[in-house]
Each structure stands twice: as structure tokens, then as C-alpha cells.
Length: 262
Image (cartoon, rainbow, N blue to C red; front, side):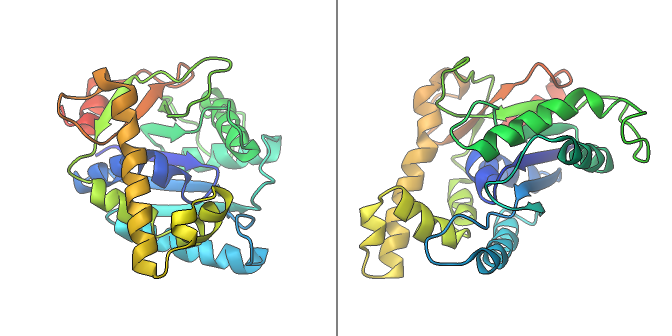
């Protein structure tokens, strides 16, 4: 059994980037943890922060169940205020040491959102220090650094994303979409508003809105295969891709096989 720790800036970040992988791993008996560094309490147009915080915690619980019973936790830092400071770094070091992941998946540190950038930077800052005993000495240092993988994005500076591992999702795509849509406050409301998804905003019924969202998400989750076809078996329609980060431990055949099924 391997432990995969997927660290995102917000509730729903890792659902989008690696929810399908989470479903596959959980079904195969591996240990999957989603950690949201923030509580997501700023992403809405009508709800106030404390109401939204409670709503998003409930959505995390629903998504965890939809993904097959993974653990879904948050560090409960306010949305928009995540920084790569020493206190947060030490807090994350202690968390990583407690969970002892074989693999960490997170954002790249080049991103439009400051929380995403800070999240990726925090993981990079922890990558070596999790093995230094005199840093946070109350938590036992790791003897072997976890593999670190980065989620796909479209940014090109300082370097474009590189697809080192492709995970086919055709068998679990419906379950991934179901898990993502558990974050109702985001996809039916905030992201529809922020992204000008008029088909969703103008839908006459919840079922109609859900249909539009499923079509949008299906198209989104097919793009990694279209963008990086050589990373997937021929005939794959849906997938996720990950870049191996050089700050982490060495990728192994065992980890690659657990992710890709081959």
C-alpha cells in the first residue's frame, strides 16, 4: 500500500487535477489524502466568508465519499491569504512527516493564483527539510524523501509543463465528474459567474445546469490526452498528466505502475 498526499491551495483544486487518479488508487487499496491549504472562504458572490467556509467543508466531505472514501482535510487558512512563510512551512513539514507519503502531488509554483503559487512553493520548501532532524525536531524526520509530482497547467514561464506520466481515466471519468460537482458552490455558482458560463447561469433547472457542467468537464478532462497523446495508450479519451519534480525522491516502477496500471 502506497500513500499519496495531494496538496492543493483550495477545496476542489486536487479534485480537478487528480480526482481520477484518486479514484483509481483508492479502489486499488492505496491510501489517498487530499489536503487543501485554505478553506476556500472567498470564492463566492453572495455567501459571506464564515457561511462559505462551512459550505465548502461540507462539500469536501461529499467529494471524499464520491471519490471512494478518501481522506479530505484542510489547514483552514483563509482563501487568498496563503503565503510561503516559515510558520506555514513548519506546519506543513509536521503534516508530511506525520502522514509519511510515498508521493506528494501539488501545483507548480508558476500560476495565476497567489494561493496556487504559495502552495507549490511551500511543498518545494519542505522537500528537503522534511528529512532534516533539527528542523521541527518534535516530529520525526523522514529517512526517504517522497516523490513529488506537479499538476498540469498551461503556463509557459519559466518553462512549459512537461507530461512525464499519463493516467488514463476512461473507466472512472463519470466518478471523477461526480466528485468534482460535489463542490456545488463553485461549479454551479462561483466559477459559473467568474468564468461567464452563460449556459450554466441561464439554465432553467438544476438538471439542465448539471448537464451543461458535465459537458464542460468532459471536454476539460479530455484535453490532457489531446495535448499529450504520447503519454497515453492509444484509444484513451480522458486522462490526467503529471510532471516529475526534481526536488522530490526518485520515481519508482512501483509508483508508476500504481498510477498508470501498467
